[in-house]
Image (cartoon, rainbow over all chains, first blue to last red; front, side):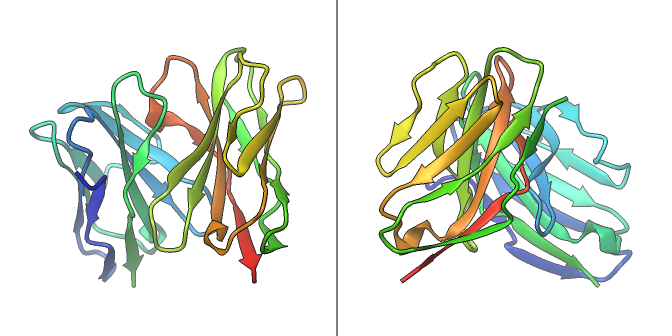
Length: 113
Length: 116
């Protein structure tokens, strides 16, 4: 296992289009997290899963955002009707239950034009 | 709610010298974890060092060490013998005890450049 992987690495989309990102966590990790990171800021928590259950969503996660982890393995984050303000790096991380370290992917950089 | 403040947006250091990155935080919790993460350009964020608040001894990991001042709510990172590969953005993060590893609160980061 080579760590947390995210796909695509970069995405440019026109305003109003839908986009979907994928995250593959470390295989034995049952917790998976999504973050948004804008330029010059630290990661901001969006949501997390324990296995296939989405247990918490941040207020930052508007109705246009939806995340799934259907089989408790990989996860997808979809943004509908993208806006320029959605331009950011979207990070995924995973951890074991009870662990204190989160392992991050390289992120997907979204640019909305 | 917890807040984490990194007051130095950018810093630079000459190769082989020592640099200290600052971090302060605010919390009403008594037991928690503090972290420094490193995010190199175009690469994933990795954990550099971790400190448990209930431990008085400062954590060290090879060239990386922290100065943890619980009463002052200060958590600085010292990098000794800086190397070009240390060039990265460094994030200080706070995590409550018995919570999820991925639910840390991050500061806005310090961009460190190591100059040859």
